[in-house]
Length: 113
Length: 111
Image 1 (cartoon, chains in turn blue, brown):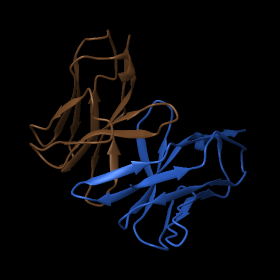
Image 2 (image 1 turned 90 degrees about the vertical axis):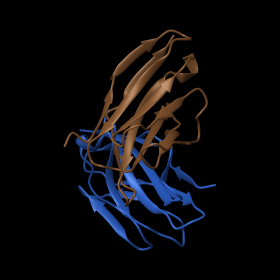
Image 3 (image 1 turned 120 degrees about the vertical axis):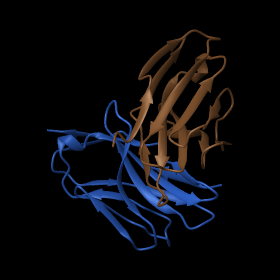
C-alpha cells in the first residue's frame, strides 16, 4: 500500500543552520506531495505542496522538490529560526474516490538561539 | 471564515462512557476526515466522508462511529470509551486539490 517514510527526530539545530528533513514515499498511483507543520498545541497547517514530477514547492523559506525517480520529497531551508521549531509531516495524497492522505510519522525540529 | 472548528477542546472520560466529538467546516468542502494522533505514530485515519450522507472506514475504525448528516458537520462517536482511545483527535476537510485544512484538535483522556 501507499506509505510515507521520513527521518526520525528530534532534529536540533542552532539558529541560521541549514535544515534537511528526508522524506520518501511509495504509491501505486501518481500522488500529490505535501509538507505540513504543527506548532505546539495546534492542528497541522499546510507548508508547501507539489503535484507533479520536478515541481518545487516553496513557502516561508522552505523548499521541497518532487523527485519521481527517487520517490523523494525532502524538505530544506537554508537558515532556520527559533520560530521554525515545530513538528513537520510529509504526506502524500491520491484521489481514490475521496482524497486519502497518508502521513509520515513526523519529525520534531528544535532550533536553539 | 472560521475554517474547521472542533468541540470540545479537552475531555476526560471514564472507561465505558460515551461521547461525541463535533467537527464543523464553513468552506463547503465535500471531503471530511477524522484522525487520531499518538506520539511517534503520526496521524492515523479513523473514518472519512466524501459527501453528505456518506461515510467510510479508514485505517483504525474500531471503537468509533461517524455520521455526516449535514455537509458542514462530521461527528465522531465513541460508544464505550477505552484507555487505548486516549489520544488527540483532529478533524480535517479537503479541497479538490487535496490540501487539507485541520481543526485545532480535541485532547481526550480515558481513565
